[in-house]
Length: 163
Length: 374
Image 1 (cartoon, each protein chain N blue to C red):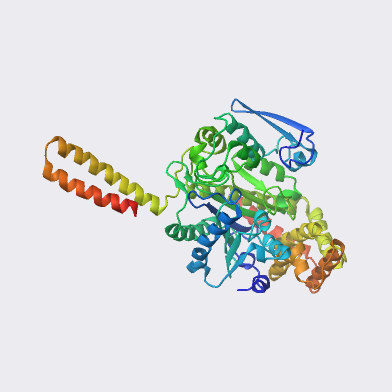
Image 2: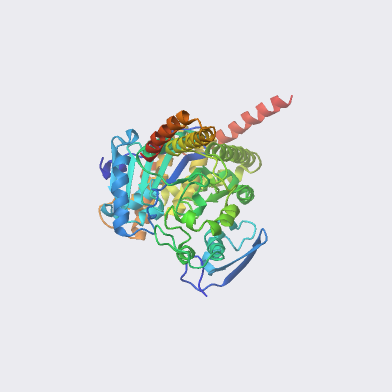
């Protein structure tokens, strides 16, 4: 059996770790186990070591032969590299990634920096939602004059969002 | 700007005297960003990688922060030049292994460096001397905002910035500080500190990052997680932990002066002796001894104006810097001779360690402490 880290030496250290009720196995060669500090159980940087490898096993549990429609990346590729193929892969493999991200990070949702472009898009889509609500109401009330004006505004906003 | 100019001036972070510079050598913050729906560099075919590079590079070079910058394709740099940049922490070891389709752009002061097509399409890094994570973040955040207005960056409302490795998703931010901790190492307290830091979800690494050995009593501390916490919160948490470690390091040094003055004198004396008289020296030995010399300056055994030559030797004696300063190709043994020669030359007029001064400092400190007790 080959070492999971360097993938060239024979594994001689076999590690099983139960983390939050999930079992993860890692096989290491002598050099890599020393390198990762496995010999010293107290200083063993578990997260560091398991991230790549545990991640691969985690994702495998999801659907088996999914392929990213944007870049053609598969789960097998993830298992090999521990990296994803493109930004769309997060959507494609979202099911398997969810528990992985949960185990890896403090939270599951981004609360940090919001790019201006995304902030603007969010603002516009909020505005769009409000206009659509008003339009529905106006139509229900048979207030066609308002409805027509709202429809114009929606068209204009659609144009703005597309640009 | 040419490579020779990069080489001729040491980075500002090395010369600068940031807050807590006795213990914190430098602070770095890097952001990882990618273009939407383009294969990440590790997965992209050569043609797509080159396309992405051509799309990003002009915008990076046009940054106001990058006026008078050094910009080079990785394929046009020699292995040695790449290694020099690694030794200065301007590119990662991973980036140095790249060729076609990757580039690096850095400013003259070497405080900002942007890698294109490393593990992510964009890796932007700001370096400051001393403990200045906040201001390093401010710089790189500004650059990020500018680039974001020109490029379609992969961002998800729920997951934040999308990165090649799921460990970076969210903020895409890694903030780290390089700490010089000889006091904690000499008093055998370092493992305790490392374990405590690991427990609270921060990573401790060696000199050149992931998987590298700790040499010269230098340790890098950084955040491990990037999702579910604001950038400012991560930096505040990290800064707080580092401040605690600084305190512990100073305590350890005081303890050494008070409880083990002879051991300390011996260490500093040996470091001085070996560095001034040895004719062959490996880079590891040099780093470890220079670390003790740096401690000697901190404690007053050497005059304060000798700090810079010591700090500079930390970088100058690294293998690639050494090779670069020589005309012909050197093997490891020849490098060890040259390294010792450079150190001897630099330390020629260096005064002998004045351990009495350290003792006097101690008495002064001790006196002020007992005054406080009264």
